[in-house]
Image (cartoon, rainbow, N blue to C red; front, top):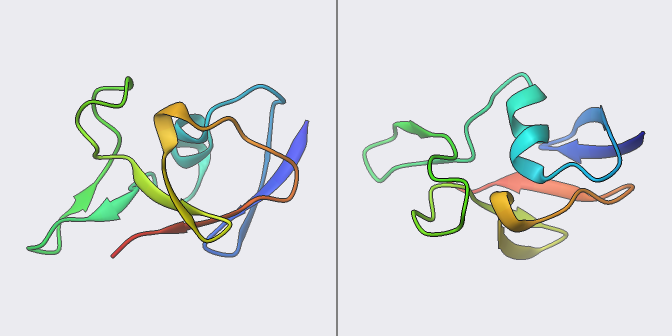
Length: 78
């Protein structure tokens, strides 16, 4: 198990998990908001749709292609 933070929420996830799994386990599974304000969750799971864009340690990433690391700081994009 390892610990990471999504918008300050502490989450313990299995080692080897992708950030999409951590988002799904969090209190808010959305990765970002659309221009109209709708919550957007990961969709395709293979990096094509871009719906899982997040910020990890200050860098934009795709949650479906980013493995979880101990202590990573994840922020949802507006």
